[in-house]
Length: 377
Ligand code: CMC
Image (cartoon, rainbow, N blue to C red; front, side, top):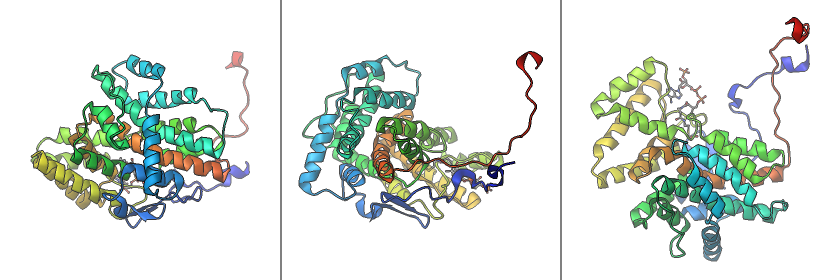
């Protein structure tokens, strides 16, 4: 016996505070703060670029700082030609998140200042990652359509360029507005699983690309960022609104999770939902697809009534991305294109904290087994 067997296990690390952070606060009562700003005060009033600046610099920029940051981001969006070729050569059946995970890792190979681990170099690296993750996503999407990705335009903002490069044509004003809101709402969220994965990797003093790669692999799972794609599959499977009740009850009877519902931290409605619900309602009005909106509301009502849980970020985000014309396998890559800002901010904060994240475990295996050589087994 040793001390480890007496340890208390906190299953799923629920309610365990693994470190201090100033970046974001997920309030169980249903509020979300980025660097002290309630997201309700940011959505619709700032651009995603301002939020990305806020996360890594820990303060909002003035106009000149914002312009310079936007210029830096746009000039960093271009990928090395060899990477563009790798993306084009990816087999068509590979999930975009798998490609993204590999290509973000590959970005590390092209970091010409890889030996410089100073704070200034990490800040430049953070800017490059925020700029280049959306380009990888756009390049993959265009390549799957057999189309080259257009070069970013200096007369567009950063988020507008992302949509322009993804779709291949300039975004309309209302599409850009939806994109900013979506990106802001996805940018950070406390010590969620992928951010924690990034911080664990950073805590070993590994480089920022390794931290981002760990995070992408973690975000991909359907219990985390992969949920949005599953939400769309469920909405398609349900068909007409009149089948919602039977479909949802069927899943609950089978003890299956309803994708896009439930949350580890929030005891009340996820504060991002009201923004996303509003976006979806507007989009469905414009596109005359109100039956889809009504179907979502019906699902919300039934799941809340039967399980007392609320939609999370992924439920309405899926519908909003679908309305923007994003194919469902690109939903999580879109999420990644924004969450990269949170991950790099947390990676920098973890470097500052300078402590190895290494929990213990409770050993429940055997002791004292008699060793038998291989020829006698
Ligand atoms: N559908 C049905 N029941 C649920 C769901 C759901 N989506 N979520 C939670 N529950 C029930 C669960 O069955 C359990 O009930 P009981 O106590 O009767 O056994 C109770 O609520 C607690 O659930 P849990 O799974 O122990 O809670 P957790 O904190 O471990 O899980 C979660 C949180 C998000 C993984 C879970 O709610 C879930 O699997 N949701 C579906 C996947 C999803 O939408 N993920 C996106 C998460 S938020 C955005 C993001 O980070 O990407």
